[in-house]
Image (cartoon, rainbow, N blue to C red):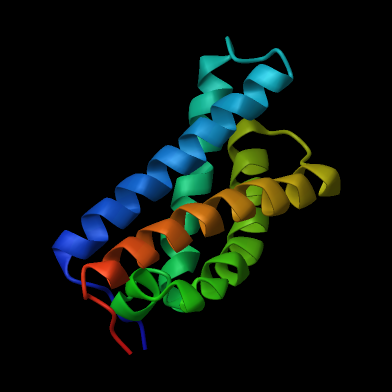
Length: 134
């Protein structure tokens, strides 16, 4: 069953996820000197966000338990490992391009690590506030 945290807790987590995924996408485009290709940048970012929004709830990444316990953040890594290929598929479909396995693996590793670091910090902060939930 999908469990979603209350709005106050969820708002900051989702906002942080959006920032992490958007910034890393922009960094990836800058790394490849394609930052000026705004259309592709937007499609790639929105594809990642859509995949995360669809896959994430099934892995509990928006639940109170994951948002308040840093020890439960492993679920974020697992969810991103599933969401990243879905994001790549959406990107390929919308841009009518092939998406390489290397792109997917790098996306899993880099964005996954960043999401885990961000969410670990967020969960630790919430736990210090006394919001830890089972």
